[in-house]
Length: 467
Image (cartoon, rainbow, N blue to C red; front, side, top):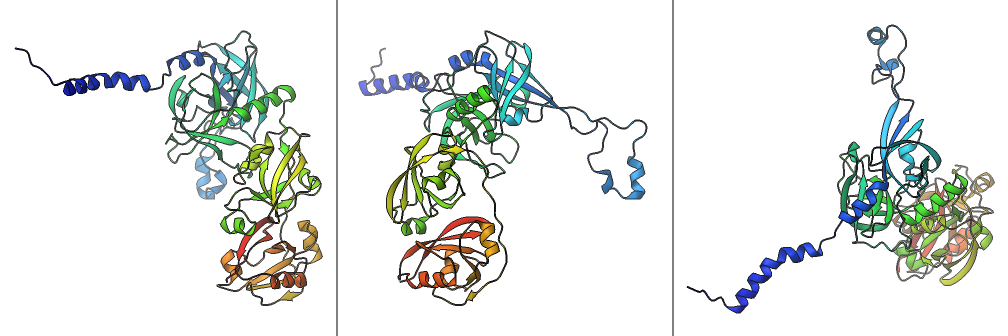
């Protein structure tokens, strides 16, 4: 007996049978990347001194009461500290033995051993390290080694498939995959430095993956795995890699000079919020607002001023203040580049010769008292900053906020007692008289930027007057 099936139903059955094959055909294929890339990935084993003595208690004996301390005293020879062992990952970038890893993997190392996938081991020399980017360059005495290529064009995009190879928890040559979640993430260091536009992925990265490569589907290294965000100690789908553009720049300098010099502008910057954007004549919050220019800095020599909003630097758009260090840091010192900015609601373009990275001065506020002014339409009580404070801050004038009236315009804008106001709108406030004149010229409903110094840090606050 033959059962005839209607054509639409027959077509549907055929599609259902084909669906798994079609779905599999659309999934990414990682096997070739793993097979070709794994031989150049290495496990890095680090030995360092300064560990706790082998039989030392996990606390300071001075914290123990005297009558109990004798129970914890050592007998015989004093204990010797044990060498501390740690590990990470890395990858070979040239056939003559240069290897990239993280700075934190080899920091403080007494000895570094590199193990390859065929279990050969080599003693490694640390050629140079760069804590600011968390990169390190090693070298082993070997030739004709397999090596990996860094992505040359920096074309990685959000949503692309990527995979990592490394030794998480000592499990050598583990492979994990995911997608690019975001680009250009800013993760300031403990020192507040921000020179790496991190790649954020959901690739599973765990302790031991640090320093290993992040691949695209073409087998190119697009980043170096560096950090994870976790509350448990393991991966929760938030991992961060140093992009290939930064790796190329750092490795080239470490290879040639053993150190890294970054582009330096010499400014303190902050984000532009909605009120500040309105006060500067911008249609939306964007750019990096210059709140301070260091003396004799490249920015000062080029004519940048506090209150300038940098919109592009070297042709690259600066959408937020965090973008500026990423761009400036990759420019070679001595190179002259264009800077597009907003000043007094007008677009301007300046030429800046980028300098080498240096540390800005930090200032502290003196609580000296001077001539006071009580009561004005902003709800502020101010007094002229004394000469000692001006010298310490490196400014030519200013007024110190002594009181802020509750529910006033100033209070709503976030101005607090102790702030030193140096600019109101486009008018310098060198003393109480100039401050009062500037306040008197403000118009109802107007939004103006206020430049001030708070606890030694220069910044801008947007102030909007009521109608």
